[in-house]
Image 1: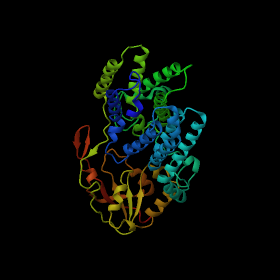
Image 2: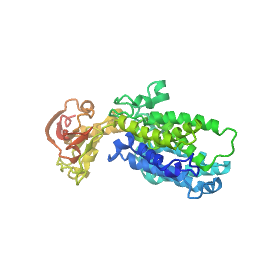
Image 3: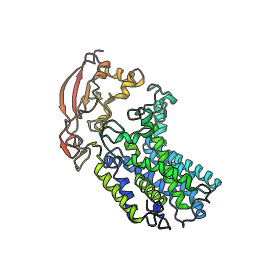
Image 4: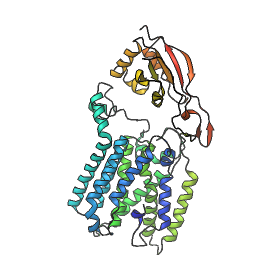
Length: 447
């Protein structure tokens, strides 16, 4: 951020205070804070993307256009690799492929360098993605016929699932006004907007206003002027990355935790817009007004931000401290929800068991290969056990199981001690929640 914000012209460049404030605003946003320490790995992946953006925008040479252009090609390749690595680890990061490409296109001063840098950036994205995802894509292709199964199955038509996208559509904008100004709908502390818990955060709304001002101001201020300076290109590159990233993000997902790289830029965008606005007002010295405005932003955001509470467990010596479970050899073990697969390795001799996930994917694939396979296992005469989730907020899939076993009965239940379910903290309050339970299921052997 310091490299992006600094400028030889003290009237144009950020001071140390503004640089620190930009970083603080970016890293204390709702997306980053609520994901810190969670196993969803959004923060490390965002770090990879931001390193890639930094490689594209920052140059080890002096701030001349020619020297910056001379290394842009290889910086674009490296930035693309970082973004591709992140996308391969978790494909939701593909959002930032077009965003970093937009930054590359802005940074070059001539057409030849621009096109070559863009091609190298795309090649880098592909290389990074292949390194971290390639082996898994090949495995999924051979196993299911879809290298990104179950997503985008409307294109690959795997016989394991219906021809559907299988991306989470719950949080996308519902009206034209939401599509235009979605961040302003995040200010009412409501649930199920762009994330499950309720939250309030002005960062994206203020950043949207800042982007609108910067685009208009840049369009008029550079009309009829000579080539952009390196610092001018860096500023526009951050703007291009943020805008393109946001547009792709809202189109594909609209899920808050996937927007950390954009959120990291919000402080820079707000303070840049403030500086430009004060410069347009022809202040002789903008240092003091900028410091006052920046301080007001920090205080305002600190007082108004209400973070989404996903719940955090206490620290422990062992993350997966699960008591070993004994079931009959060759049993079918039903995991009744999406968040229970971590328990499978803690069954004794899991290689001799048949684990079946009873969740929304099985519900959608009831008449396809997974459903047929589950039906065959459940009516084969094997002993059947089920693991019920400990979280009362989990969806109940008992109805789905009854579609396979209409006359099922549940008996012999006992808790499964696990560190992940002992205690969770929501909004500063601790609450002991129910442990997962292992139960025997009868009613399937004679079918």
